[in-house]
Image 1 (spheres, helix red, strand yellow):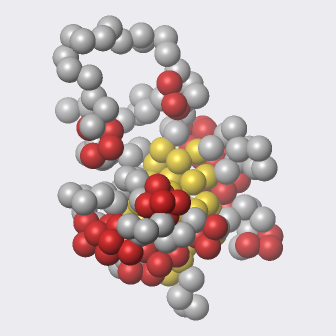
Image 2: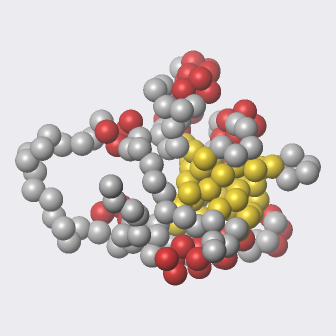
Length: 175
């Protein structure tokens, strides 16, 4: 039986428009937690990502609102990516406890770089995450589809660790 892990979602104010976007999302909204073991400040850092944040994604109506607002702001426009990096799972007593340590340990034990999560809100209305550390089963983001090579145009190097830094999603079920 999976263990339910929860933790505060922090750092949104450092990533505009993350806080405003999260405040428009309903509880239960799917999120992705992604390990960031090379983080210079915290080796157990766990990023929180919002998939479907594009003009044709699940959150297109919110994306378009912020895209239109950001037309004159190159920095903000550059942050509007799918998935949207909204913050981190808290990992200090000051921000709500060492929750990322627990989640990172569970993810590492399963050999997973990414796991599914859901957005929740505590009684004060602060954003939190909930996860059972289940593997992410997702459709590719539009930005990933835009970079797919034509079949047989380039050989695949099976030894390349790529952006996962050696982590694998080997536990993902294959259809």
